[in-house]
Image (cartoon, rainbow, N blue to C red):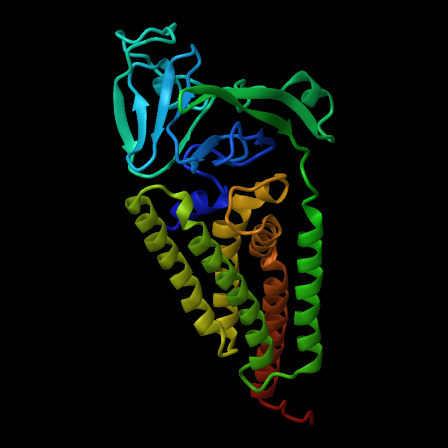
Length: 349
């Protein structure tokens, strides 16, 4: 259960993949009232029909593939090869024997309703990069953006042929270090300042513990927001329930450890170290790749998610600084106690 949210939240992913370097966008919708969007950069294309007219998305052989009927929903043609090829990003799926890969444009359609709404998402192989290796231009220069291809998606709007035009681009990675350096230096400076300006009592160092614990709790709060906002990327209720339960368990354990560390006693600093390591491993380290990805599949602004991941990854720095200072204080206290407890030596005669 502890590992589950790490893989689910780390990638900023939809159900099929991660929003990475490829970005596809429709530059000409074909007709007013058609709304296009993408999930996962170039992974899933979604069309919403607000034209008030019937719209058909044409398949790869000119056959009818999807049918958007106002007030009735979206229907998919089970006789279209695209119905099966589009189930996988790379088209690596078996095709039923009775479905021809070269279906003619006038194939007899068998329509199956796929949604009652007016929006539908699918893998359209015209709109994303199909190879598992990058284009030669990208391989030669990964530090620059590249236009990979221009494409069209043929449509029929109320029986009239039109086409939506799009562009597929490869985006260079962004720098990972600005949020990491800023958070590490800034939060560590806060902890150091508290350590130098406050003094512990005989058995506790409350200000130091509470500042460090507060930093961990702020990062936990940011991750809670991250989970809630991005729940919509999971398509089924059962998947969302699993994410909610496993996240509640892990974050609950972290908060419990922070409650112990809040009191500032020596044992609490150990609990604080464990809490920070859990945050780093479950919500930072596993998602560190998203700090360099040029686009993220999230409903949050990209910068907000990057800084949340960076904070989750670097929270160990200010926390371990506080723990180290607390351990030094405790060891010194114990030496003082041992020295005080030693009996005075008898005078030499």
